[in-house]
Image (cartoon, rainbow, N blue to C red; front, side, top):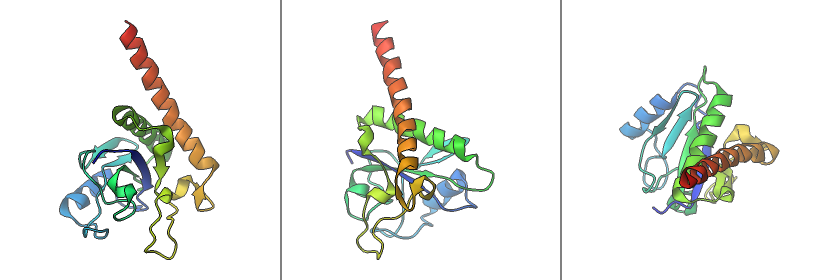
Length: 166
């Protein structure tokens, strides 16, 4: 896969932390999708970001056979009890920024799961990540999160430019 997008999700699983999601993915326990099981690239929580698969492999996390799976790196944010969500949001923003930098992905291509329609469903746009949606759609809260991603990205670029000059 040649990544062109980064898709942000929320697990909507209030009992499983990032480690539990990693175990479930490795067992193939999460059924669904085009190929019979779900898979995504990273799960993030306040204390850790776990990579489940290489970013050059196609995931099964967004829109079946569409561009959301074919060209997008999937990041799930854990929501389990005890997880510090502000720290999880910031860690996710940092990860997305570093992936943007490494894969040369523009900020407008950091999208919520909502971005990818799933026409097989009665409601094709999933309100995901639900806590970053406003009335079930991207709005001010999503724009705030994406500004955090961009702030981390701009900081990385400035640091890199300073290193090249020295």
